[in-house]
Length: 448
Image: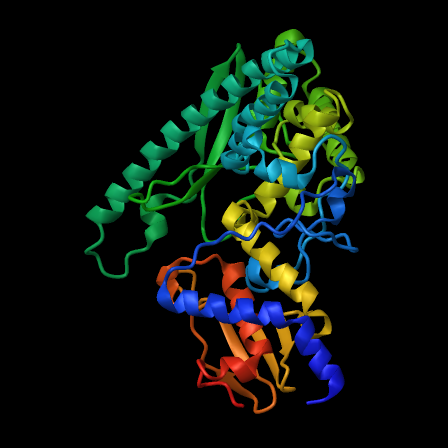
């Protein structure tokens, strides 16, 4: 072995000793994780720190090249970091106990849950102090959400009865040969739901879903699994005037009722106003470049709550409220992998792995699928992420090792029951492959 290689071996002698020690401890089952190697990041560089190992990066992504293959779901791109934050960092948001209730709420799925999220963020940010703007938002949306709930209840009640009758009819005639289902279900008939809210007459038409897509503006009936058909409802008229909303019918109708309660005239003008206002707010939110396309897909449906979100992004309640909203949306969008980086032992283990990669310099190179190791004997190994074949199945190990020289896999396993975090296991594997000459005495599958 040459002089240069010998100096390299001396440089890494302590690491290699650690490798054999760790490997023996894993074999004996007495290893405990205690790898706190990285300092806390400087908040001013929050966009340049990996959310997994908290190490500094010189590119604006969420995960470093070491952590990304072992953190992201299969075929998922490394997302850009959450920019535009002023008061907190994403790492603080993910790890501070004060914000865990926000994180665990999950992405809101209707206007009511959006209202709860916004209210929780404002309350958390302002502490015990009262906010007149917050109180006004709650008062303004109380009536709106009540109207939406009443309309849902009336449509659901009608559609549930319709579906049960159809299901009963189909069951009765099921023994007939060459039965034309459309004759039994009476597809040509109009199914009309009419009711009054605040002295405003509202009519919806209910449709059976026939294999196509539900119109984007329609209300979809939450189908019980025991019923035959699936349904959706579209607005027909308010006070005898045909109306058409560019956003969701229920939310648009509820907001129209509130406006008509103030001035019961000019329905067409009010519908046009709401449609125009909705489009303007969506364009504004998109132009902020703080919300991703995925966030825009899950925004609330009512103009009132969208207006509140637009106000928050524009600083209505200050920087902290805006930051908390942006961080919450980022976490909800990326929950499939973000939930992993919130685990402290896992974070410390990837700090341990990152330290090893840094100390071994060019001998360990991150690449798209994992890490490539050049050993002291000159062998080249690729440690790749192994994904389960289905969501239900889990592989016995989460990695594969390829000996590039012979283009064959190396069987290298660590007993799962020891419960080591992923980064610690990878660190041991990398160190063992680097000193494959020594490791081959214990790992006979290495081709030395």
